[in-house]
Image 1 (spheres, helix red, strand yellow):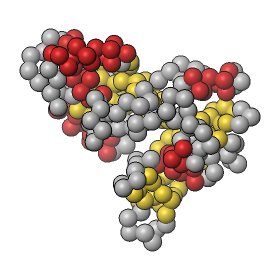
Image 2: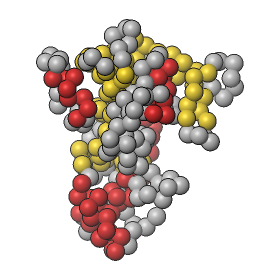
Image 3: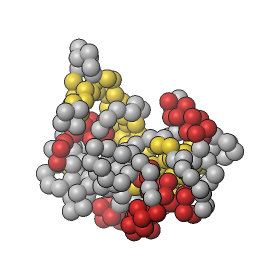
Length: 245
C-alpha cells in the first residue's frame, strides 16, 4: 500500500511515537507496542512496515517508493523488538540467518501462578486453527501438528505472577502462549489462552525483550534490549540481582 503526502500528514502522530532501537543503512529495529501490527492484514490498519516506509522517505528525503522488508513478526497483542531490512539484499541475508538460527530472540513473559520448575525445557506437538486464530497442543499422530520446543527460566517471582525468560528453539504460531498455557500458566492478559482477566491496554504481558545477531554486512555483533514492560517492574524490583536495561 502506497502512502501519499496527505496520508503522511495524518500518520505523523504514529511516526513520532514510534521507538526505533537501532538503525543503519541495512537494518532497522523497532520496539513495537501492543496493538500494533507488523505487516498488513485484513483489518486494514496501518502496519509498522508502512509507517517505517513513510519515516524513511521523510527522514532521508527519498523520491519514489521506499523498501522496507519484514524479517520476522510478533503477534498483535505482543510488544517488543521487531527487525526490518532496508534493502532487498539485507532482507535475503537476514532471512537466511533466521532460517539457520543465527538471529537469537529472547522473550519475557509474565505468567499466572508459579511454574513447578524454576527452569525447564518444554516440548509439545502444536496444531494451529486459522479459522479462530488459535494454536492447540496435539500429538505426533496428528498429520498437521508440528514439534515445538522452548526453554524458560525464572527471572523474578511475586505472589500471583512469575516473570519468565523464554527462548524459542522452534518458531511456531502462538508457540509461547500455547505452551505456557499448556503447563497451567497462561500469560497475564491473554484471555485467548486462559488468562483470568485482560490487561487495560488490550495487550498481553509478553515482550520480545532481547535480539542478538552478527550484522550481515559489517560482521559486528549486535545486541539489543527493549525496556521492560511496566507490568514487569514490580517483580523486578523484588529481585535486585536482576539486571534491568
